[in-house]
Length: 286
View 1 (cartoon, rainbow, N blue to C red):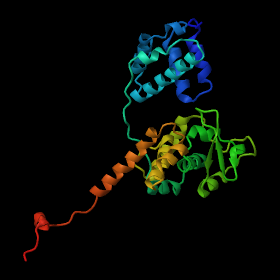
View 2 (view 1 turned 180 degrees about the vertical axis):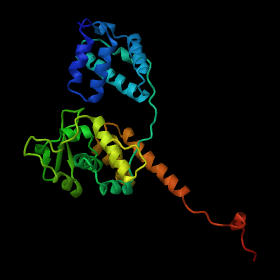
View 3 (view 1 turned 60 degrees about the horizontal axis):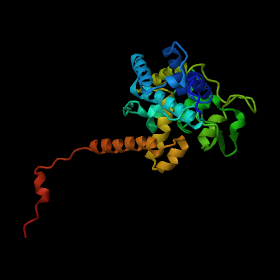
View 4 (view 1 turned 90 degrees about the vertical axis):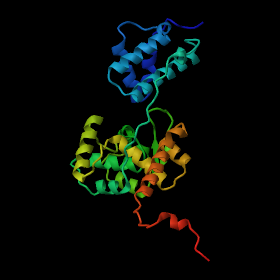
């Protein structure tokens, strides 16, 4: 017997408490969207379309809307597995098409420039550089504790997963960790501004001081890590596992970015003067 009268929002909240930021953002929007109790029986394709239209009216980007709706689809799949509902009606709802976005990253010379530029928030600088050479999200760096660090790397507990992954550390990463004033065991390794917005404001000021003409946010660090690896010829599947991507297609976007840099490099070659370009194709007379 299925349990269609159960509260969908309460069920979603239980899952969201174990998940990352996209789930919590979706939950906040769901609470603003509904004014009455929503049963699983109420979650129809039409109801999903109404919530999608609400998100559009909030001015959210198509990719953000798609991400939020994906969390609902996952929640409903979970409800099918636990026999609350018989099928996921999300499958009958219209999909939001994601837009391919240009991911900002730093070239190695720009990263070196930042590394040698003073920042009035040393912990922000240390955390950002650490993210650039480990691929960790800033949210994961906030959660990093001294007890997670091993002699040969660190244990990483992603927001979206209860299991840990092991991340090797380079000498430079160890050097940045060595600057920590954290107490042993459970103390945070990095002491960062309370909000991500404040963290990004400090980053922006630091980048401006360095003379960078790029919009530098916390996400840029992870994109920089991935792009540098692909540029150096690291196997795409190795990059995938270091980033924690479940699907290699997500990682392939960095390969496309490097391919475009190759095209730009060819276009930047200096031109040479040829009086008659066709003469190069003529055979000399015997």
